[in-house]
Image 1: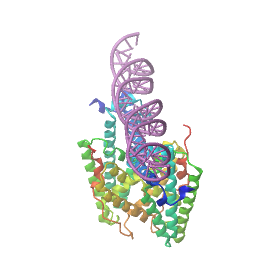
Image 2: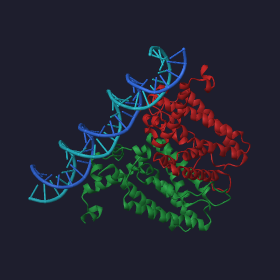
Image 3: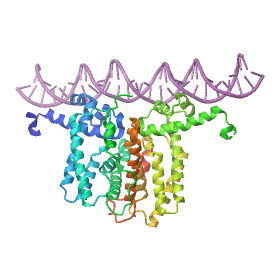
Length: 226
Length: 226
DNA sequence: CTAGTGCGGAGCGTTTCGCTCCGCAAGGGG
DNA sequence: CCCCTTGCGGAGCGAAACGCTCCGCACTAG
């Protein structure tokens, strides 16, 4: 358990390795958001300012890296949901969750759906996260602050829809850093508009039936054939 | 000008060529939506059930095909905006425009932003489209049915955000056709939620400043250097 | 100085890309 | 009947990008 000693006492090389690991995960998320499923390891390593060799010393394959990224992201989701539940006001709690998840930049994960094999650990984390979000939504429904015709899946799909920001991704890819602040502001406004649409008030009923959970889960299954 | 004679009088081969052209444009849009910027000509031709040779007889290069796709899509935008203006009720007119544009599946165009050179003709179409949408938004503002703190750019960004549907794209890519109907329904609900958030009512003010037009235009400029 | 550790990136073999080129099927006129 | 035109499909080219391996080097401890 020597690896649990405080950073200051660790060998300097190990501290560097840890910084590299964090940089890699962050870079992987950013590159995935911009390049989608075709993101390359070279691009990820370059973005993290880390050699390709170091990447492959830490992760056996590209798929391994993505799986680990997915795992830590699910941890963040769960944390955000629990933080939301800790807020007394039901609406504020739900809004906190939405904002927190959008801050992670979750749109990155969608492109790898169906391309990697899921570990049981990941399935478990996903289940626990879903439970927490369901509790958040139920509480908001019970308090009458979330429109009654919006289901849990509606809320999750809305988050996913807002999570992928083509604007931010492309400006980032083109190095237009001077516009990134304005783009983030614009995105915050869209989030606020969407949340206003979710609030219970004199809204007309939503069209169609409430969507089912399989919409969310289906694409993570591996297409083995065709 | 013999090529302007009605289709019925054209040689059967020319009619086939015209069908192929339409199939190619539709396929290009779909493949772009799924594969993003890395969409390949082979995938487009296969999806259109057309030989690669036919594609290259019609379009000199891949970029040519994308430019033409962009051009006809801008035509559709303009048409939708004018149809919206033709509706008396200002809110219904705006909502019609949003729904019509989303039905085109516009998310496909974002990935090619900045990767192709824009022709003056395209810039002109874009300008005319923007004018029409601005008129729609102004009318809705004047009638007090659109929240006052939502700007033209907010509306356009919201449309873009809703246009790219990771859910629909991925289910389509994986051939889960049995879920496509449910996904389209789910997307219609999200659109309705967002539109409710845009309506003028007791909404709290939006955060930050109204975004500027450069957010929208910047990424279409070609990055020649870096 | 030597030994050990962990770094960066050149480069391997493979895959995928944009695009060219050519053989072929299907009418229409002689 | 043949031949000639028209437009089709797709094999295959050189080039580029891919995932990953492997090795020379910088740095620190003793």
